[in-house]
Amino acid sequence: MDTTQLSNQLKTKTPAMVYLVLGTQQVLQQQAIDEFINLIPANERVMNVGRYDMETTPLAVALDDAMAAPFFGERRLVLINKPYFLTGEKKHSKIEHDLDSLKKYLEHPEPSTVLVFTAPYEKLDGRKAIVKLLKKNAVLVDAAPLNEQQARQKVTQQLAADNFELTPAALDELVQRTNADYGMMNANLTKLKILAYQEKKINQQMVQSLVPQSLDENVFDLVTAVLQHNQVKALELYRQLLAGQQPPLRINAVLVGQFRLLIQIKVLNKRGLSQGSLASQLSVHPYRVKLGLKTARNFSMQALENAYLGLVRIEQSLKTTQRDPALLFQLFMLQYSQQDKKWA
Image (cartoon, rainbow, N blue to C red):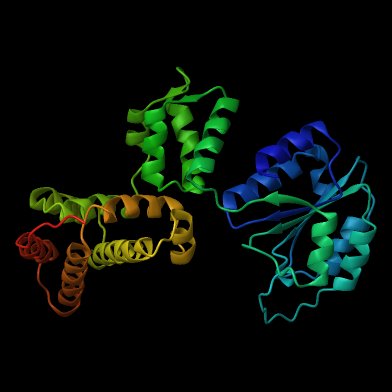
């Protein structure tokens, strides 16, 4: 189940005795934790909520807490964070974890305790017997990073639950400015709701005024201007980045990375890889691949390679000379624009 389903279940049904929250999306992990903490009345949390980090605390300590009776309350909540012993990760730690005791607990969990494993990992080691037993006995909560469609849906649901409306154009703008990263989208919702408090409607202008574009997003606009041989716009965008106190080497590194990604996307797409496969193979967010595919299809491999090599030469000049970065970029654009624009 996802965190929305978890919230609904905890509000309408008796909670399970064991949960596993698995996935690397930090905001989803925190949302799940908040839902579990809400199970315990505020005046009981000091005595009936236990948090244990397995990188610093032995598992036996957490299990002792889980087996204890609630203190003047209906139930106890025990959160076990970073259970790395469930993964294939090798940790050089002096802490010993009693997995036999965990096995016994999972076979006979304490009815008055909700035991939650918060595992900020992509996956667990399914070959381990303790992992198989945990998955058999625990309710799985998915905290994996959301794709663009899922992020759009979740943001819309969150706002609707608070009686806010997000116009389609505003949602598109939010997706674009955050690269469809749900964590970044969620982080901006509070200030957007404050701005739209009276009308309860968030429009595109509100998003533009409050949500900053990431460096990657600004650079993507710059990449497009470069490929279109638009010298005026490209130089203007480059100077805006410099004015925003972005280091020239960092700007150039992101530019080089964007063109490298476009080249990789074009090569792999010609080999028949889908958008999802490209994202997995290149280890980048699917939204970046979506934008990259749209751009790469419109330009030849030669055009992408020429831009990439020109930017690599700028990097060398930035590291070995004291020349003005804006001048170096302008010279690059002049040289690049002399080449004929080719469409793929």
